[in-house]
Image (cartoon, rainbow, N blue to C red; front, side, top):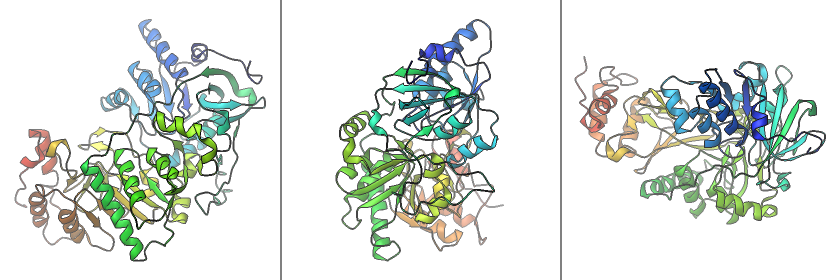
Length: 499
């Protein structure tokens, strides 16, 4: 027994789950995601399938997870449906072949959808903690995500007590769930560092089926070193924001920053941190990455609010070693608070996210390759973009050795419309789209952001569009995509004559 609750092996815990059950797994990215029970669920699925019996479960998470959750469950054909976001190659393959049903969601809306019952009954919550008290008071590990909602709504609960994370993490979380309408009040966050909730999650002890002890690292991969293109994107973003400071459109003490996930995001934050005109700033974001911790140590980031510590093993180990140095400087919140439109709008957040592709008029595709194949999902980018004080999207001007231009006449899938996207940045420059008509936006994007070898094709398309408010020709809108699908190279596209 631990704190009065039965101790189970991961296999014993997995044996409690039935075919067709729906499970809410804690975590937000691989940070804080359960890693033991999911492996045994995958092993059980394989055994059941070999015996000719069905076994699959509905999987709801905060965001993406790690190989020991999404990866093993997908490989064992154990996932009936999945939401709201994923990044696992094996799961992606099954989604794009129709073997797993996936529905993409704004991350801020997921907890509310669970509470309202939009996703059906939640049979289980499987959540990682670093401490559990006899009355059911639990301290989460390196993320929050949707874990509080899962723990409150699930019929039964399995906790993975991961000793790799110190119980001293108590105090780094701010757990707050808003009331449901029509009695919901405003969310009282007026500064990034405002604490509004509790340090721990209270779980009904009667629902806790057992505790599985583990000692496992978060499965967060290391980030690549920035290349010249990502460095230039970072410098261009930092230069743009410095210009906004000089123009008086950003207050002298700056505004909170939201940054997406990945190598470009780390490069952008590093460039901002080293820019002499940008003061030390605060983060109000969803994912706290390596660059945030490095800049915090240097005094360039004053505070970081997020939903997860998605940092490499080395950075997390060093952070835990110096934990008291960061107490009061980092706060982990539920995703519906870290991503909440009300708070984003109130704080005047500058959002910086990455596009898969964008078109001449400022529409952005964040999710689908060639309009058909799901990459990861919209994540929290929509939560921030639609409500940001300044919304920025970054992307390289070329991928696959120049065979693909992420800047196209018309996006093959729309996630963020021109009404939400304000600034576009590539390694070539910055396109500030604010206050410009569609035709003007197209000219600016071509001149400042598109790669030179694609500019003639894009200009020809714009010319064929004629004098319309939004110059488009259906015959040519996807000429670049068709050229890549047919010949493997967008540069072979032929922009035809308008009919």
